[in-house]
Length: 294
Image (cartoon, rainbow, N blue to C red; front, side, top):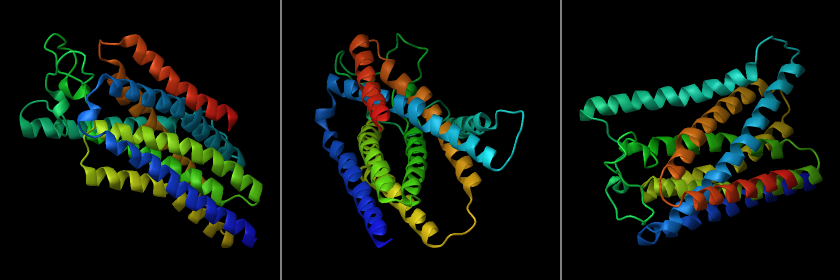
């Protein structure tokens, strides 16, 4: 039992340090070096990673966990309840964002980004920056730059998912299972941490908030492991259904951010369309391979 606890504590330390280092590494990209065309390609790779994480990891896991819990509780309903919970998460972000935007527009008297950023100014062609072009009136200014609100929602949904991943490690009863799941989560979360970091940088989040968000994100899996260890040491009635509901809502928010924020932002520019698509496919392939091998 003590050896199992030691393995879990080692996994906790690994899931804290490596994703933290991976998440803080792209902070060096802030500044003049980020204003090249390659930055857009890196963003497309991150978009492909999030697309794969959404469709191959977070959504399937959420739906299967909810269905399994309904079966274990002997609940039978002629209604797609897991999909309904996921849709609630999607609609929750949609409603909150538009309420915030409406309040912002009423206060400002016109449509403005939630947090204005310098990327909304015209830039020379080929710089890789998002620009406001008068020849494309159907795209509002805030569509061309990652909004800080959406970046925060993305951080929140990823953090909730990471918490449950850590909980799965903490609840294992054999060392081999702990190591197997931990290694898979470690690789997966490190890649996600880099992608999340890049998107936060594109949102021009202040440095102190950037560090706080990345730090909090990396703490979620260790926190989940800690909760799992405590539950194993002190067995009692579990709230598995509440966990499944939260996981389903988090999956719905992730769907919203992936398809209405990340992918439109990365692919809306008319320049270098094919290289951007190939970059996105590269990111998708990396995550798909990790999912297949894990």
